[in-house]
Length: 162
Image 1 (cartoon, helix red, strand yellow):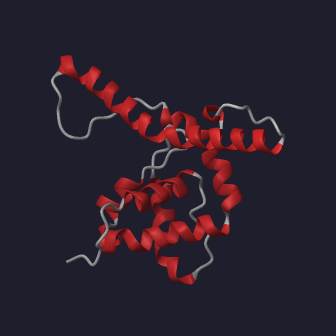
Image 2 (cartoon, rainbow, N blue to C red):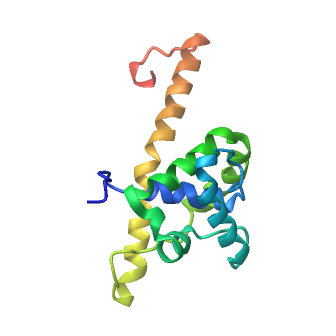
C-alpha cells in the first residue's frame, strides 16, 4: 500500500509543474523541503528549456521516483507552501496561460484511435470538456447581473428575467 487513498494525484503534479514553469522552485524557506529544493534546482539546471515550460514528469518518474510516495504528498505540500507564500507572483505567472490551456489541441490518452476517427473524436472530447466548465462562469455572470438589476431597481415584471 502506498498510503495514498485519493482518486488522482494530478492536482499535485500539475501544481508542481506550474511552480517549476513560474521559476518559483526556490521560493520556499521551509527547511523540510531543502532536499527536494536542491533536487529540483539540479533538474532545472540540466533541463532543456522549451519556452518557459518545465515538465515535471521526468523529474518525478525518471530521476526521483522517491517523491512519488503517498500520492506525491511531499511534492504537493512543497508546491502549496510556495503558492500560499507567493500568491501574487504565482497568479501573475499563470493567469496569461489560462486561455491557451482552454484552447489547447485535444489529446486522447486512452490509446490509439484509427486515423479517420482521431480528429472528430478529439474535437468532440474537447468540446465536451469545455461544456463541462463553461456553465459555472455563465451562471456566475447571470447571478451578478440579476443582483445588479435588483439593487438598481430595474426588476422587470416577468419572473423569467429574474
